[in-house]
Image 1 (cartoon, rainbow, N blue to C red):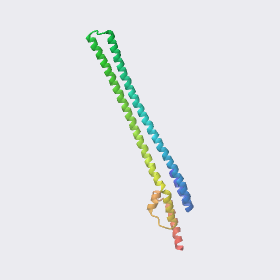
Image 2: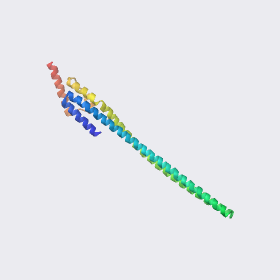
Image 3: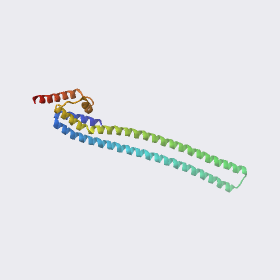
Image 4: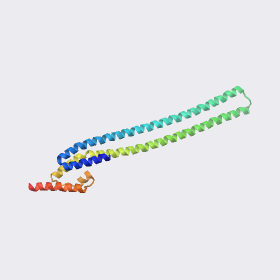
Length: 210
């Protein structure tokens, strides 16, 4: 972007030194500069889309892994319960107290595994939330950068035409308002004021000679 602005200032200086023909050459070169700027904006937008896609895929993968961990823990709990039931069937009923103890151990084990699974799931959800927040911030920054670049691109699209009209008015000796100068240059510099005065004087001299 800065290189583009430097090139635009150089083109404007060359056009001012070359007169009317220089202005037409500058318009052609300015059009090429705008095309290059538009290409760079398209590249920035494509890179922003790729980054968002990668972040979304990372979030999906993290969610899939969290569900897989939960399924594995539930399967382990079922296997432990099945093993306990098989052991009890082999041993038979050794007493009501022993059976109740086994039930208590089985329930405790299942409850502990369930709590661990919930904790892991909560941690996974927090990680997903953090990734989503970072992605949202990055997308917001990318969008603001694209908006600023696009606004600047729209302003520069009309720059060659406005500049040619301004130079034409100066060469014809027509008055140029300060607003026109500021709209093109953001406020006249000393060199621009001198250039405007010189061209305005030339137009007045031609008008007096008639």
